[in-house]
Image (cartoon, rainbow, N blue to C red; front, top):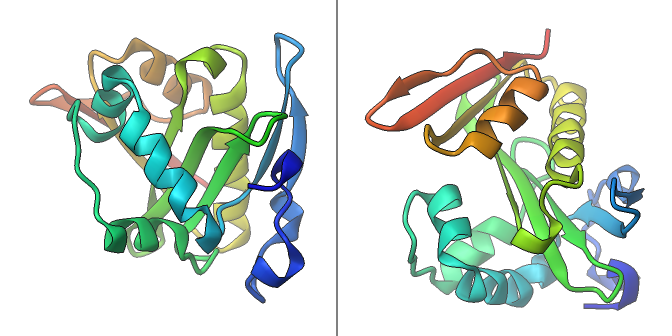
Length: 182
């Protein structure tokens, strides 16, 4: 990765949404750079998943150990930035510290997900990412956000409530919540 998360001009797809590139100052004073995910982020994403702590994997994938192949990495990093959208968060040294995405769920509805490394949690990053996903979805005519998370994950529960999601429906330990954008 390039310093400050800057992509080289030749790496940018024609439809790359520059307006979602942002520098943010978090509650603890640290800064981070947020930008849309690029196809060239594949190796860094693979490394992040391969080295993620078991709690992060469990809360994100409902499984504490996952295997991901190259076609899945390619699918996660090659986006149309309309129906499939993702943001990466980079620390000042260029290290990835978070990711957020939405994927199609139903007509006009997307499923949203956020993962942040432990050292970067509880400083407003996940809330910022949710707001940016909502902004992107709303601009693209998406009418509802949908989320699944483990019912035991109190941090996710607080994030959903603070982001305006419905009181979740819980079944088999999985919470399901949504938010209307109209």
